[in-house]
Length: 80
Image 1 (cartoon, one colour):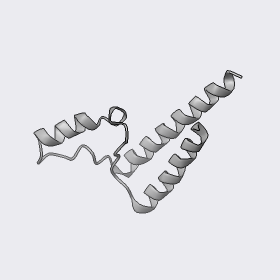
Image 2 (cartoon, helix red, strand yellow):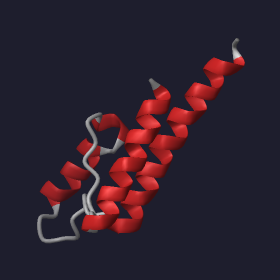
Image 3 (spheres, one colour):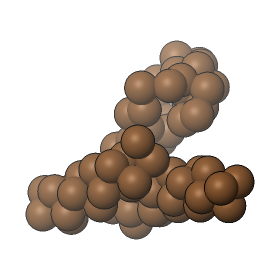
Image 4 (cartoon, one colour):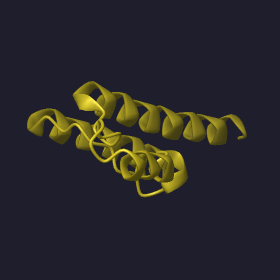
């Protein structure tokens, strides 16, 4: 359910804010550029870690995911 997903993203954001999370690891590698980031990490292990996006990056990611879920829910309602 899209609305439940959006609510989960909000709850996760609150937890991330509490613990100052700074890394996004998505369960869908194509949605979070996992393979590209892994390649960057492997080719330049002493360089900046591409998985660390900062607390603002985590918030932005969760906002995007929640917004996408709500837009999907709205699209379903609009089809009624």
